[in-house]
Length: 307
Image 1 (tube, rainbow, N blue to C red):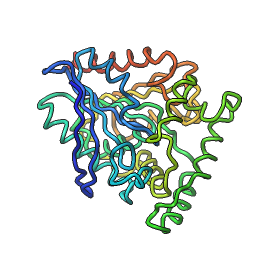
Image 2 (cartoon, rainbow, N blue to C red):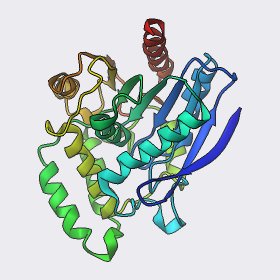
Image 3 (cartoon, rainbow, N blue to C red):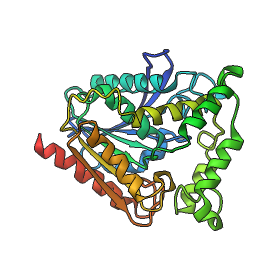
């Protein structure tokens, strides 16, 4: 079964596009995939098909301003001035829909990059609504985040934040790409040139974001790494951090472990991590991605065996 559906965000009634997949009427659990900046739910189709083949249901949705979670084509890359709060409410709305469609079924989140920041912002108040979380390609806390947030806030005062920030976006990508510049633009995202080519040719992904979208991203980073505001009601919730050793978003290995360790500081007791040698940012689509999928499968099955 593959079904396209949607739900309205309780924040502002924005339609959120959802893809549901299952090969059985009684899945072991639901795995909710959350994509990153400039992505869309269809980029996770391969791993979703793998998981459905193992007896799980898979759900993906487009973050606001991405894929089909837009009001018009002009809104792609624009987050409707909702900020981090809207992203969290969107996730509440999607999980409510998942619970309606897959009653009494455990839910695990697999969240990538920008999606992983949104997932951790959601976790602060909603950790009893899920059974586990896997954080992929986590952006480590950036010391320039406060400055960047101030700049994007000022730019967002113009035209409701719809100003496209191509120069900032390209400069960030170039800084990540320093180690891989001989392989071409965006090589930092994935070592597989075919994956990069598919992204470049996808008009729904290869977009220039707005200042509003960038501000939302920076707000979510603040939320994810702010020691205040955590209501850790489910401290034994299992959380797995995974990343490639060559992912520039994590900055370096000590920063990666610091990101994972932050959840220990706010009270979570079952936090683990895996680094995959030679992989870059998009571990779910990297060369050797099947090894990553197997670790996700092992994590979810391990938690299911405990239940």
